[in-house]
Image (tube, rainbow over all chains, first blue to last red; front, top):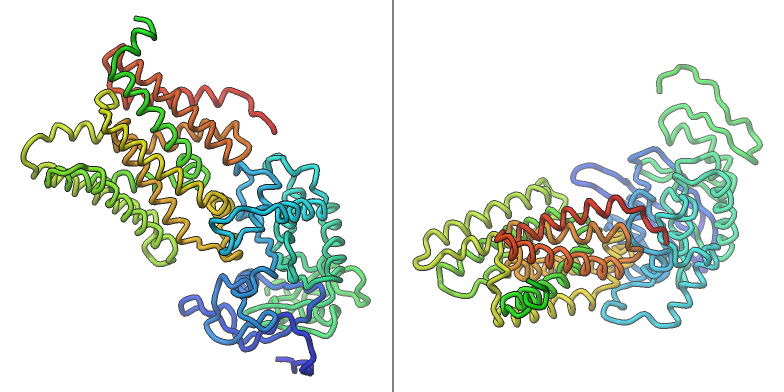
Length: 264
Length: 270
């Protein structure tokens, strides 16, 4: 465990996690996770499969509850601050053949417990249109989603996550099935957004993520944070538990390593 | 015999009105059954409802409330099963409720004294013997279904499209699921007289599956589903009358043919 950076009482922590553990039956998915994040920034969350990345996101969303430890978002329980958090789930969750238009998808982002049995206001309708404009999807507003490309569908899901005034954005592998140019465009978009809000992106694509994010969290049951992106990358082996070859941009050191043997 | 002459028969008029009322239920509920892929759950609720019919026959009371209770109870049990990720899967639960409901129904029907010729009617429907009282009952049930679904419409669409996201938004997913399953139980009671319990699944699936090919939104899916169901039931009714065939089965076969024909039509891109 690395020593925690000192926290003054004036630190405006958006997310504070302390001693978080999560068990699925007897299985430990997360053990003793502790970190804190400020109100702005672009954080990459990487790690091998089954390491607990999606679980951590779900705990931050209030869908799953910690077995032990504390999670505070803006000083409150995650379930109380749902209005502030935007979420883009893994793409496999969504059925592209569902009869729904882009505008209707984004509209579901407005819904909450408070809106049950209440009509959608015109202010909310214009929020939907604004979100579509922000992600450049206005011309697809009334198009059924199955006619869109993978990248366009992801932009719709992003618009859905951003509708309203979100302060934190959580994305779970948002770029699977998206072609490289669209992915780059999306990363740049997120990078710009991160100047105004906190963005946490879960990704397998270590190399590309590292070019855009400010910080990398490596997760394998527990979370390793580092002072710099370069530091994170050179510690990847520890996280993945095997020698890691990767190609990264903008990182001064050479990161292609010799394998001493071919077994991990 | 011309169409006009046909309409002079009271029972034909009643049957057609019943068909319209049933189509409304099919179109609305079928849209969610097909897009949420809960066809087997709907089947489970339908067959479990039969237990209520047996109980009603045994006590000599109207089958509506007992059938609805059995159906609603199964719906609630299946919702809870789906939520808990335990060793009993929702799929197994459906099988158990399906078989148990049917068995209870058959058992109590066999124990019933008096007229049980209704057994065939409950299993396979008999739209040609619909009375005015039945029509009023159907209208009330339809109103219930319409009110429930449209009150929670935007939330039901949300959980059908992306349940995980809806949960993250804090929507009461379990409650909405139970509401939907209760509406299915209501629809089963509506369709009992038209096609019978055994074929309820068909009318909850085929018209909406046909309509899905052409619908770009859930609202359109509901409207087109109602239209297709009405065509299926009307043609089935006419065939039954003309050739002295069971109306329920005829409607279902028409529904199948219509579905297959629809697959030949090129998809409309909106």
